[in-house]
Image (cartoon, rainbow, N blue to C red; front, side, top):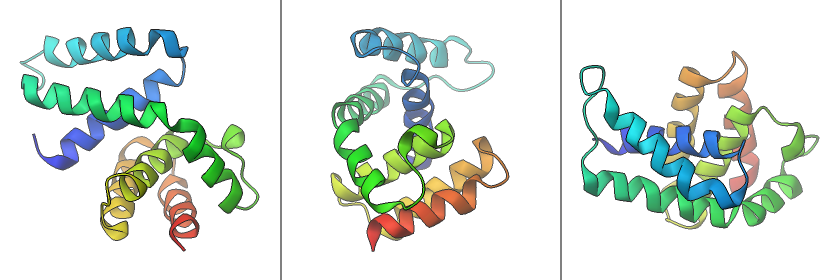
Length: 138
């Protein structure tokens, strides 16, 4: 898998776990990753090493959601995380994590988030995600 494909899988899992309590996180991750591998005719099977990368990243991001949300709430004027579209919020969290914790270049993280927003978000998602992330990296 490419880094973009791994990032997209991380996004999908982060989006899913928003609807479950923390105690169920590991079960949700396991089920989602098993499901991703269940239909090799529709998509290729994810190698175990990449499954582990995805799992570690989702768990790392989930562990610091409060910290990420505090930064988002303090810098994105007029929008609280509780009011944001869940797709947009998930992408902002993912990109912010990659910038702050993984030292990914800001431009790369923002571009990747915008590209995923085009695929999974609403018509306004790409511009919203781009604008929010621009405020966060200022």
